[in-house]
Length: 421
Image 1 (cartoon, one colour):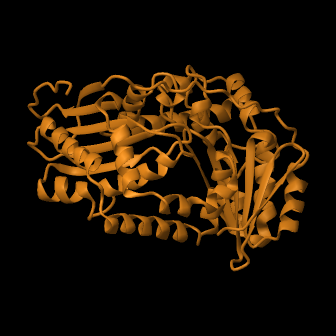
Image 2 (spheres, rainbow, N blue to C red):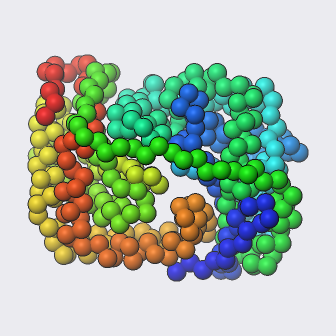
Image 3 (spheres, rainbow, N blue to C red):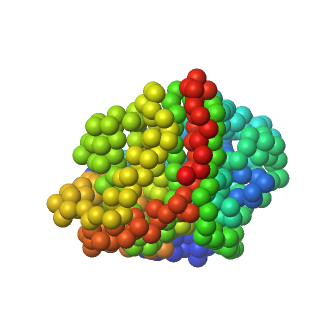
C-alpha cells in the first residue's frame, strides 16, 4: 500500500506527495499528458523532440543538467505514445533546485533557431541510428501502420519519417509547447523525505504563478475492429528471418489487460515459459522468441516476436506459434502455473515499491490514467484473474482476422514467397 495525498493548484497543476522518511532522498516526477498519439499526422515525432528540447534551456536557465549534478542529483526523461515524463532524484535538502528548474521550463523554453536546430540534429541522428541503420529497427513503423488504420498509434513515438522533424519550424514547435506543456496538463509527484505541508508550500512557491493553458483533451479517433488478416513481407539485410504478429486487445483499464499480461507471461516469460521450453529449447526453431503486450492506455496490441534459426522456413516457424496458440485457446493452464505467475507479478510490484523513483513515476502514471489510487489496486487485479479468464482472452484476441503480421526475410536466405495463411 502506497500512501499519498493529492492537491491541485489554482492553475490546474496536480500535485501528489508520498512521504517516505526512511530515505534522505526525494524523487520529483513531472509528467505531461502528451505523447505521440496527440500529434498532427503530418508533424509526427514532436513529443519525442520535446523530450530533448526541454533540456535545451528555459527562460532564465541555460543549462538544466549542471545545477542538478551540483545538487548531488540525477535526472532523465522518457516519451511514449501516451505521455512524456521527466524526473530527478536528489538529496531532500536540495529539492528546490529541481523544482526551480522544472518550473522555469514549464513557464517558457528558451526558443531559438539555434537550439531547435541542435536538438533536431540529435533526434534525426537517433532516428537514423535506431530505425534506419539497425536490423529490424523499422519494425514499429511497419507494424504500427499495419495494425492501426485510424487511431494515432499508427506511427511510433520517434515519428513517421525524418522530414517531420527536420522540417519542423520554430513557430510549430512553440505552438506545440503552449498547447501541451502547461500546468493544467501536468502532474507533479514528490516522493521521499518530504512532508505534505512542506511539499505543498514549495510547489506553490515555484509553480503557482505559471499561467494555465486551458488545455482541452483531444478526442482521438477509435480504432475500428480489424476484420481481415493483414500481412507485410520485407526483404532486408537482417541476420535472421523474423516474424511479428500483432493482435488487437483491450485498453489499460480493462480486466482483459491483466489476463493478457498473465497470458504473455505463460507463453514467454522466463526459462519455464512455453515458448522457451518448446520452440527454443526442444524444437530449436527460434534464436529468440517472445510475447508481450504494448501496455498502451488506449486499446493496444498483443505481440509475438520471433527470429528463426538458420535454415528454419518461416512457414514452419509460423505453424509452431499457431500450435501454441491453439493449446492456450482450448486448454486451461494449471493452478500451480497460475499461482506461480501471480506470485511473480506480486513480487515485481512489491519490489518496485522499494524505489522512491519507481513510486513517483507510477503515481504520476496512474493519475494520468485516471486516478493515482489505482496503484494500490494492481495486485488485486492480477490475483482475481482465473485460468478461464486467460483462456477466454486467448480465444477472443487470437483470431486470424484480428492479426497483423510482419515478416522479415533475409536477403541472404533462399526463401520462397510466404503466402497468407
